[in-house]
Every structure is written in C-alpha cells, then in structure tokens.
Image (cartoon, rainbow, N blue to C red; front, side):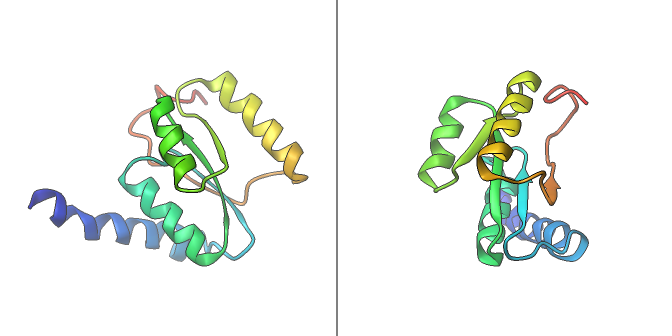
Length: 115
C-alpha cells in the first residue's frame, strides 16, 4: 500500500522536472542518473514518449542488464567517476554530438559521481 501511494509522486516529479522545468523535446538527449530506480524508470518512459534519446547511469551490472532489456543503449556507471567520464566521451563521439541537452539527477548523495 505504501509503495502504491508513492507512485503518483514519482510521475509528478518526472513531469515537473523533464516537462515543466527542462522542457524536454523530441530529438533531445537526456542523461538520467540512477535510471534503474523509481524516478529513473519513469523518466525513461517519459523521454521515450516525448521522443528523446536516453543516456543512463546505474550502479550494479545487474541494473545495467535490466536497462538494456528495456532498450536503453547508452548506459554507464553511477559509482565510478572515471568510467562515467570515459563512457560519456565515447558515447558523444560515437553519436556525433557535442553534449547532452538535459540531465536528471535523482542520486541520493554526492558519494556517487564526484563533481
């Protein structure tokens, strides 16, 4: 019951962040941190609905596999800053783009990817 009560909050959070604040548009690139979590999974659905391209981070390899099964192609580490930087540079180069348009960060603290 408690988990079900929290679901509307997650959807409203994503709509406010990606829709109202960021104004995510079709064709834009969005980086979703903690993409295998509640906010992240809804953000993936929202981005696809809009027609944006998803780049994602997740911690454990099992979460990377889960995201791949959902069709997310660009996934990197939430916990290893060097790997994150290396992967993102490679993704951007392979995709022929200079950067990401929108970043959604629902990580709970700064111990993940250092600033």
